[in-house]
Length: 220
Ligand code: DX5
Ligand code: ZN
Image 1 (tube, rainbow, N blue to C red):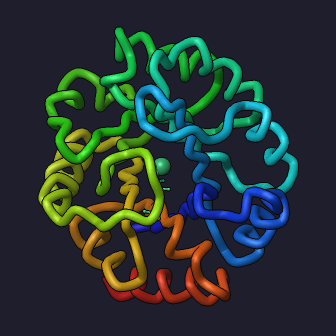
Image 2: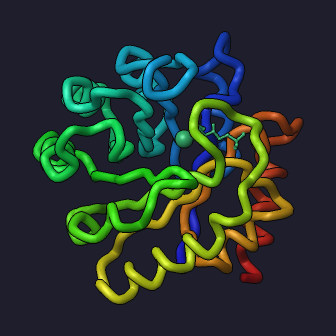
């Protein structure tokens, strides 16, 4: 299985955001995870399409945009124009989940659905075949640096089964509390894409941390 590491810039130094993205690209990251929060759907406020567009030319890494905003549809074309490769949203933040998936695809991006720790997998019943990515939250959304919630592990395994049964190349990403010491467990459960914010940006040597993560994944 191909594994991908997606550092979340939520934990980067925002005064030096461009340099931080260059640094994770040089350190071997596969994606840039871009957390968008609106102080409405989640109790925190971060960055929008302007910052996304500013970071686009900084590296060749695909921008993995995680929208924690409600409502979500209005802002999707703006992120597509700003250079997002993947746009993911929470079903609770959309009035019409199928329409939002269609809107992301019509705007030329890959579509992801994000499920919070307490959000049931039934949201995938009529959507999975239309998705490019399922993002399972292993913390409640809103903040970096929270503890991984272990009850998400069997949920990851269940989504892995559903994806394999469907036989489509749908990425299974996990977001929240991932560190070098639990990334292998998350991979064993069936994830292939790993968001890590504080674990990478809180470390002294980004390349060494990403390398350690890759080494843990290599023996899964
Ligand atoms: C939480 C965000 C995460 C967060 C991950 O709402 O979606 O991407 O930044 O940060 P860590 O890895 O520190 O849990
Ligand atoms: Zn995220």
